[in-house]
Structure formats: C-alpha cells, structure tokens
Length: 156
Image 1 (cartoon, helix red, strand yellow):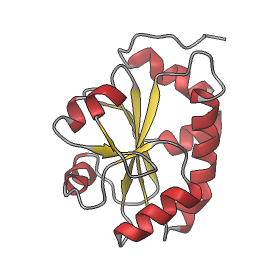
Image 2: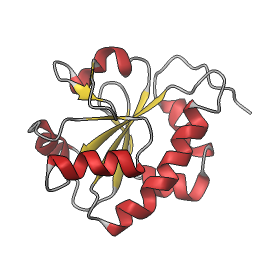
Image 3: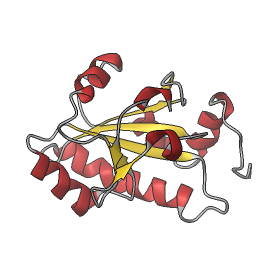
C-alpha cells in the first residue's frame, strides 16, 4: 500500500507485518485512538464487532483492514490497549514518527477518529466512526463503491 510503503506495521502480538502484502486490494481504516480517551474506549468495542463481522463472519472475508495509529502516552499503554480492547488488526509501531505525518495529513484534531482510505491513501470518508455507529455494515458497501478494489464481498 502506497501510504505505508517502506514501513513496517505490527500485529497484536508485536510481530512485524509487511504492509504491501497485508493491505493489498483492501479498504483501510486508519484508527487514531488512545487508551486514555473515554470516547475511544467507548467506540473500540463497536469497531471490534464491525471488524469481526466483516472479516471473521463473512465468506470470503471482506477486503478491509484497520491500522491503529496510537496516540497513547507510552508504548506500554499502546500494547496494553491493543491486548485489552482491540481486534486482530494492525498498528503502526508506537515509536514510528510517521504517526505525526499521518495526523497532519488527515487533519486529526480529536480522537477517536476513523479515516477510511483507498490503497493510495486517498480519503473515502473521514467519518468512519459516525457511519459505523449510524449504518453498521451497510457503510462498508458504500465505501466499496468508491474504493477501486477488486470486490469479493456479497452485495446482499
């Protein structure tokens, strides 16, 4: 994926993941969040359910991935938050300064913020959180329509 080209992502277990492989032909949700934010702790379980329904309960799994961009105060806080509350999605390592560039690029002024992007990093919507709360899985089909990905998601 162009957005994370040359960078490493990590999974929940802390293993390195190649973004080119993991994010290929997928819609990506950039999840700016932190363990200290009450609204973050309220939304994360909703996002977990949404993610599980799309990836674990769909056959074939939907072309969707989340990349957590931590705004936690320490790497330990980030890891604890991921283990306590997150789904099996990916994250930008806490020490990677690229998170500051992403915050600026996507104009993140408050969290939680879920920015839905194409593989190129082009924004589909910066209102992912609101759309998931309001429309549930239906919003994913809307994102697919503009995402330029090969679709294998059933259009029920």
